Amino acid sequence: MTTVKVTQIRSTIGQSKAHHGTIRALGLGKIGRSAEHTECAELAGQLRHVAHLVKVEGKDA
Image 1: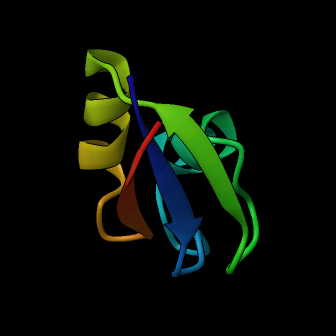
Image 2 (image 1 turned 45 degrees about the vertical axis):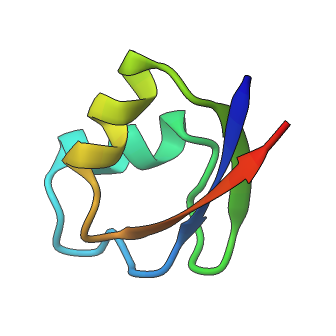
């Protein structure tokens, strides 16, 4: 399984409520906060939705 590290790099101020919710669902909420997730289709969709707010780094499990 591959895990990815997701880091929030931009603020959600001025973004839609859907973007706020997606950031919270990813376990983020403040600039610089990171979370690790297992790669799956649902995660790919979430990352596509907020790609302008986060940085994604791939890791091997």
